[in-house]
Each structure stands twice: as C-alpha cells, then as structure tokens.
Amino acid sequence: MAVLAQGLPLALGLALHALINLVDLAMVGHLGEDALRAAHVGSTWNFLPMIVGQCVSTALLARLSRTCGVGEVAGARRANVRAQWFMVWLGVAIALVTCWPAGAMVDRTGLTGAVRGDAVHYLVVSNLGCLPMFVLMQTTAAMRAAGEALLPLMVLLLANVLNLLLALVLLFGWQAADIPAVGVVGAAYAAVVARTVAVVFAVWWLARRSHPLSLRAVPRGPTAAIVLPMLRDAWPQSLQIGLRAAVFLALTALVQHRFGDAATAALAVTTRFDTVVLFSSLGFANAATAYAGRAVVVGRAAAARAAGLWAALQAGLFGATFVAATSVLAAPLVQVFVSTPTPELTNVVVQYLGHGAWGQVLGAVALGAMGAVQGAGRMLAPLVIDLLGFPLLLLWMWNAAAPGNTLADLFGALVGGFLVIAALHVTFVQFGRWTEPRELPR
Image 1 (cartoon, rainbow, N blue to C red):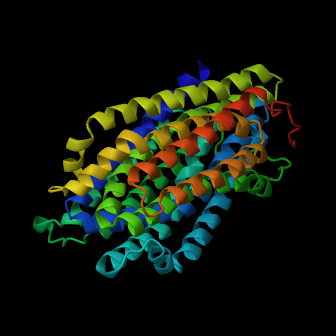
Image 2: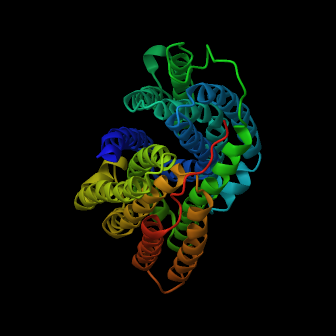
Image 3: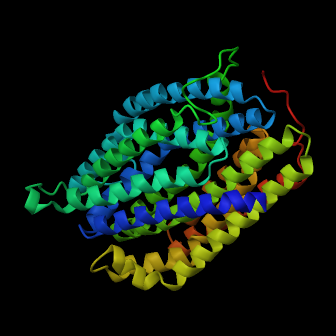
C-alpha cells in the first residue's frame, strides 16, 4: 500500500504530463504530416540527452532516500546542495555537446528536404533546453526524497500548462499581439521557456530554510562525496534507458526506410501515447525506489522485494488500462492529431495501438520492478539483465523488418522482446540477491 499511496499520485501526475504533451502534438498535427514527422524525430533524438538528466536525478533520489532513512538529514542537506550545483553544470555541458551532431542524427532516420531542416532546428532547440530540464529533474527529485509527492507534480503541471499556452501562440501566431507563427519549432521553444519558469519556482521552494533538504541554512560538517557516487549510480541507468530509447529510434528508422512517410507520421502519434505508459511507470518505479531504499538500510528485505513486485504489477495494470482504452478508440483518435489522415496513416495507428503498444506495458512492468533494486543501490544487476534482453529485442526487430514481412511482424517482435525483458526483471526482484544493506558514508 505504501508504494501505491506514493506511486499512484506520482503516476497520475506524470501521465497527465504526458497527456498534455499529447495536446501539444495535436496542435503540431494541424500543421500537417510533415510537421508531425519533424517533431517526432527531433523529440525522439532529444530523449537521449534527457536520459542522462533523468538517471542522475534518480540516483540522487535513491541516495538521499537512503541517507534520510538512517537519520542523516544534515548530511543529506549538504549532499543536496552539491548535487544541485553539479546538475547545473552537467546541463550546460550536455546541451552544448549534443547540438553539433544534430544534423547527422536526423539524417540517420532518413528525413530529407524541408522536413529535415525543421527536425534539425527542433532538435537543436530541444537539446539546448536540457539545462532547465535537468535542473527541474534534480530539484523535484530532492522534493520526492524529502517525502513530498504532490508538489513535484504541481511543478511539472505548471510547466506543461504554460508550455501549451506558449505553443499555441508560437505554432499559429497571434495577430492581435502582432506575433507571427513560428511553425513546428515553436513547440520546442515553448517547452524550453515553460521549463525555465518552473525551475525558478522549484529552486525557490528548495531555498526555503524550513524545507527538510533546504539549499540554505545547511549545517556545517563533513560532506560525503556525492558527484562521483551519483555518476556511478547513474551510468548503468543511463545505459538502460538508452537501450529503451534505441529501440524506438531503431523502430523509427526501420519504419521510415521500410514502410514510408505515412507510417513514420503515424509513429509520431503512437509513440506519444507510449509516453503516458512510460511516465506513469516511472511514478511507480520512483515510489519503489524511495520505499526500498529506506527498507534495505534497516534490514527489511521482504518489504523491499514486495515494493518491487507491487510496483511492477501496478505499473503494468495502469499501462494496460490506458492501452486497452486507446486501442478501442484508435481510429477516432487519429483525427484529433491529423485533420485529414490518409487511410495508410490511420491503419498504422490502429495496428500499433492494438498490438505494438502492449510492448510498452511490459516495459512498464520491468521499470517498476527495477525501481526497487535501484533504490537498494544495486545499479549493475538491472543493467546486466537489460544487456541480455535488449540485443535480442533489437535483433528480433531487425529480422521482422526484412522485405516480405509486414508491420504486424515488426510490432510482434516489439511485444515479444519486451515480454522476455519483463520476465527477467521480475524474476530477479523475487529471487535475486540485492536486498543486503550497504554501509552508507557518513
């Protein structure tokens, strides 16, 4: 019940965050299928640097949860200050490094002409936006480590609502204010500005002296290393989520080269629905991370295992409910995103939501399970499992996309591969050796 109590509000909030992104995509879709393809490719590639920020913030959540769990609140405050500053500099570095190969990255997916130009512009703006997004991830991770579940969601919702309002203006223009339409890249600019505003509020909240992990009024004392331990904890997660992103980058490239423009435009719609399942599963996974982190350090191994299994089940049920609903409504949903969809585009969306999207449900099960393991500070074991499962999945997809096969074959490979990965993670949570408490630096 503890995982559900913390995880469900977070899952709902993150799912709402993804749903708001769907509204953003619906606005982009009214610019045409080319705009959908540009936004899809740009946002999919931008997911890679975002993985780094998400994993560093998850590592901070796990470490601060364990430190607070043994009563070292003063040490947690000192660590939090250093971690927040580190994320600022990491955001600057990642933003700059990921911008220069943007053209080559878009080229790998097969886009050409004006669509390619829009995708590159979208990707560059989005990558520069890593800085505010990284800081937002890190500040909200500190809030969750302090036991705050609602406020991080409110901050994310603030960013998303502002994002929608700005996107509406930038995508289509505002004649009364003499603001011209920017086009599809306006969605990227809107996201960066909205996140920056949310960051200002989040930093102010943590700067209050009364906050348990306040950035001010930090007690003097020895500060345990935080940056290198965070990076050590984060790189396996980064590689893990990177493998998941690689699956959908590979899916985009295979579909574009093998099945054409309309199928890629359809993926722009379906993969945004996937983010609802993905983000909600992170809510349950983060709850398991915080709960298992506190349980392991006091020797409650059975509670930590239960947290992983319940998070896996809850993430799977939440995702399955959403996918079942969208599969029933697939055909009418297409017209929300594309004014006059072609039959080919509609057919691909219906196929994916009715079949391929169940791969994301199984992926949600795996993420929920591994959240508990990561909370215990065991980062390498989940990575080893993924390194066994994801090459199999990618090879399965490659073979399924061979000439003569259909999209149904490709989507079937997606589901089958994720089924194997989910089974491996759940088995490890139940039977693996990951619940022994570790000594924390004081």
